[in-house]
Image (cartoon, rainbow, N blue to C red; front, side, top):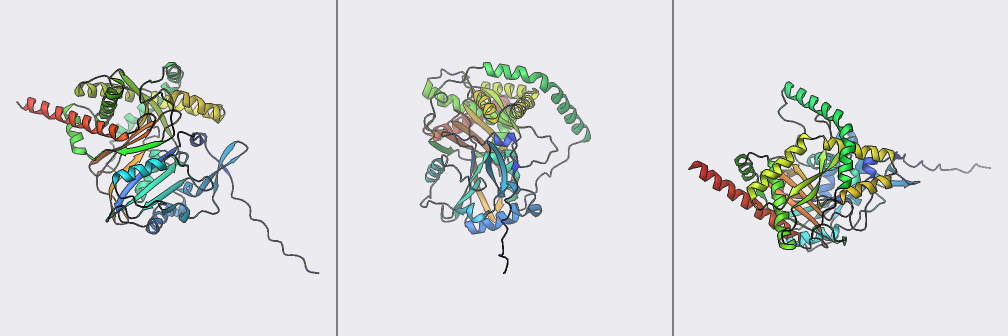
Length: 449
């Protein structure tokens, strides 16, 4: 009598706990999904071609060890989150033709991205997706990227983005002199010593802040989203302005954000708001740390002046506040506060405290510097790149600033209950930038005499 042949069931892939700083973002709500979204407008490409490029330059990089998270899905067991290798992983399930057609204009693309913004990613696979609109125009295609925030923050995802690009070498640049490295190291150690002492005071002060109240923050969110973006802004003009007013590039761009809100709220609230708070992600990795796919940033709250009418005065006040923030220990202290809460408290409770603080803000604003030259994907030129940052809790506005190839682009992401037409805020940014440039030219002519 023969013994029956028994096929042993293969063991499921092992579970790896999701770190608390990543699991914090697995708290999507009905009104805010934690999705980082981006649009690439490039020379014609197919989903099949993009799969080949992605496999070679991302999945297979360093033998698959560089970005393994793209093949890991999130599972929940007994109230905790874990990473687990997806046994059914296939690029065909993540890089695919967009499910809609007939999108051939900027307006139609904005509408499409806005409609997709409240659609969650499938939870039975790794939480990312690249949708390809192959026939956006006669000569260009659109890659629409959707990545869940649990996979990593902007600093972690930037190397992935540029890994797709032709002949982009990251991390290369002119080395700092030894004394500069030493000074930075000493400054960082001083900050690390002061931060634990300042942390409780910073937390107490923020807990006592009253939430912003205006047409841009306060009304209950609808969950219906809209997106827009500005026309490209010449980076050399940004440099002209910052040199004229002895500011930084970031000062100029943040002053334009302040001016955009000032102009918009002047029309909607009659100029009754003097300042608003922004939540600004600040990278807290050490200068020599190679970014891994994770979330490692502090959400710093910045009070932005919007009640100053003169564009020059507004820029100088923004610069003053930005300089004070740079000198402070607040970014490291804020990160430390969040880290301790996430370690010491249940995830749901720590998330509620973080949401309580976030709800004091009107918007999330992030500024990402990219390479100054043209970019290509598989020999195809990248004509435009815009991204949109997600918001937590009851924040319904996100502003994402990106510079590359000699231009600056600003993405606007809004809930329709707050700003039903984000193009108005985009136009207000452009108007503020033009006014600031005109003022710089005027003062240059006066100085020349």
